Every structure is written in C-alpha cells, then in structure tokens.
Length: 289
Image 1 (cartoon, helix red, strand yellow):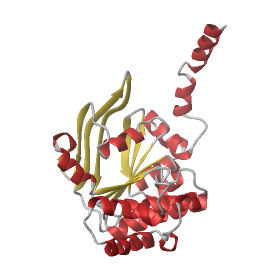
Image 2 (cartoon, rainbow, N blue to C red; image 1 turned 180 degrees about the vertical axis):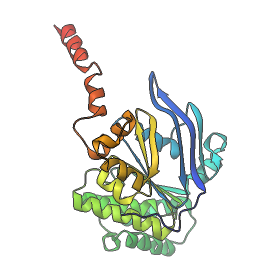
Image 3 (cartoon, helix red, strand yellow; image 1 turned 90 degrees about the horizontal axis):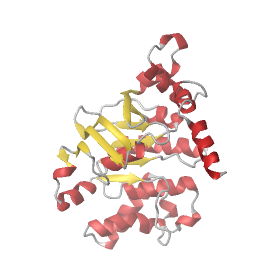
Image 4 (cartoon, rainbow, N blue to C red; image 1 turned 60 degrees about the vertical axis):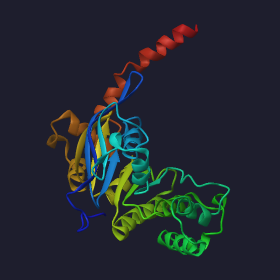
C-alpha cells in the first residue's frame, strides 16, 4: 500500500476554493474546497454522477467555475493569459480512461508527439527520450507496434508514457483501472505509485475502484452530489470503512462507509429508493398510453 513519504510537502500545488458549477438547472459541483499537496497521491472518489469528472476538468482548466477559484502552482486559471495557460498545461500530464492514443501512429510516435509539438529537439534526442519514457512503463520493446496491437493494460501504459513525455510536475489519472482485469489493474496501481515516487510528481487519481484507491492513496477525497463529504488520509478512510455498526452516528459517515464497502443497503440506496423513481416511471407509462 502507498505510504506517506518524504517527497510530500505542505505546499499546495492545486487549490480549489468554493468551486461551484452548474449545467442548466443541475448543480454538479457545490462549493468544493480541495487542496492537493506537492508530491502526494490524492484519490478523488465517489459514485457515478457525483462530480468527479467535472472536478478533474476544472483542475486541468477545461472548465471554468461559475464561482470560486481554481489555482495551479499558485496561479488562478481565471487570470491567466493564453500564453500562461499553455505554459501551465505543459507542466501536467493526463492519462485518459481509454489511453486516448492516436490509432494511426505507432506507440513510439504517440509518445514522441508532445515532444515534437512543444520542444525544438533533434530527432535523435527525441528517439532517446521516447525510449526512456517507454522503459518507465515497461513498453520499450513495443515502440513500433500500433495501438490496435496492444491489450487494454498496455494501451494505458502507453498513454502514461505519453503523459510523462514532457516531464510534468502533476499527473492526472481519469479512471485508470476502468475496463481492466484485476491483475492488470493492480499492475497499473503499482506503476502509479512508482512513477509518483521516481519522478517526484504530484498525482491526482479519479476513480470509483476501491481496491485501487486504498492501494495507491496518500490522501482521499470523497464526493457526493457535488459536495465534498470528507478529505483525509488513507488510514482515516480505512478506519471508517472497517467501523462496526454501532461506532458510526452521523448519516454522512454511514453514507461514506456504504460506498467504501460497496454495500447493498444504507443511506445511498435509501436515497435512491425515496427519489420518486417509481412515480416517474408510472408517469411516463401513463403518458405513453
């Protein structure tokens, strides 16, 4: 399991303060406060539709909050010029769910792409850097293969090699275990830990896979209905997950524990059952008669 280590500092490299975001009448983020420390692995988790992906898109500057602020390296996205925004984006890498490889390029060419776009380097230097990045993820011997020739886990690793091509200070992972078998998922978890430590980067991992979360996290953030339910160390969440029935008093703690355990009964399912779902179905059925 990941343990807090000497590379973690108290300096926040990502700061979200009072962030709200709505799409139409639906409020997706509701006053989110989250500071990510330099060098840590922060896991952001929660059920489908809780706001995880929207939160990630704010962190990378793809979305602008309706209110509140989002800062990277102490700079507010809202005050950045286009040039400053481009420079900031070169300081982080992203591993998307699918790996997002360009299918017409070899794995080596995919990794070389950000180097060719953003650096003025000789081709020989780029080739060496590509080999180094692929070696980090165990794919150096597969540089000439096309994405279609790779397994799901290998595509994720290739996407990760591309994400670290520009030596970023922050790595963002969007559901890195999605669609992978348990063994491959565990390998990706260990790779996330190893790269965070070796490259001295800060990692933010968005996931709903609890096995992965409890393996890699230094700290964890639980979202529910666009709100932060709790931020704490992995140990704090482990204690909450393992707490006996009589030890938890608040509805919030019971809700978090149900999610962490994947329980079939509890506040989350009670809320779903009382949401008027059956009435909505009856109304639709009436309208179609």
